[in-house]
Length: 373
Image: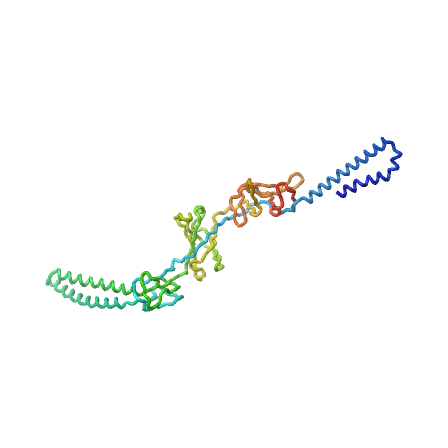
C-alpha cells in the first residue's frame, strides 16, 4: 500500500513543479497532457496492485507438510485379557476319614509321585484287620481239610463249597480292609511343589476337607474369551503376543486350540495357549494381555489416523492440489475399513501418489492456499 501512495505522489509533485509552465499551454494541450500522464499512472497503479495482491496471497498461505500416498503392510490385532492356569494344580483331600497323626512335608517342598504327605489314624482298621486275619487262618484250615476229604470222595459237596466260600469271603474282606488302610496314607498323585498345607496334626481329616495344595507349573496355559465375530479370523496355530504386566514379561506362542462352543452369556469363544514354564516365572491366575492378529494385508493404502476428520457427510482428510498457479488444500472424503495403532486402512477415496497433508491439516479448510517444500 505504501508503494501505491508513493507512486501517486510522484506525478503530483511533478505537476506542482510545472504548474507555471502549464499556464502557457492551451486548454486542449493541457487535457492532452493530463490524459497521457493518467495513462502512464494507471499502468503503474495496475502493476502495483498486482504486486500487492501477490504479496498478500503469499502472506495468507499456510505452510504444511505433505507425503505421497504409497502402499504398505497393514496388520490388525485384537486385545484379550487372559488368565494363567495349570493343569497340575490341585487340592489334595484324603480318601478316608480320621485324625491326622503325622504331616510328612512342609510348604514349598518338592515331592515326587507317590511320596507320603501325611498319615491318618488307622488303629481301628488295624484291629479289624488282625481279627479278620485270625478268622481267615481258621477258615483256611477248615477249607484245606474239607478239600482233602472231598478229593477222597468223603463228605458232602455242600460242606466243601461252604468252606471254600467262607475262605474266599474273608480274603476279599481282608483285601478291602488293607485298601482302606492304604487310603489313610496321603500321597502325592504327581511330581510338584507343596504350595500350601491346610490342616494341622491332630485335626480330623476327610474326603471333603482340603489337606494340602499341590502344584506343578513346569507347563501352564493361558485362556481368554474372544468375541464370536472373530470366529472365522482366529485359528489354532496362529501366533499370539502375550504380555504379563505384573512380571514385565513378553513372549510369543501359538494358539493350541479354540473352543467349539460359543458362550451364550457373553457371546464369546475360548482360546488356549500352552506355555513351557521351566523357570516358574509365570504363576497360576496371573493376568495376561493377549494380542491376536485377525487381519493382514501387504499392499494397503494406509494413512495416519490423526489426520482424519468427520462431518455430517462422512470421513475426510486434506490433499494438496494444484489449482491454476496456486496450491490449495482439497477436502477429500474417504472410506476407512479398519484402524489400528494410529493407522487407518483406506478402502476408497484415494489413489496412489496423492499428496496427503500430514502436518498443518488443522489450520486449513477446503480451498485454503498452501505452500510446502
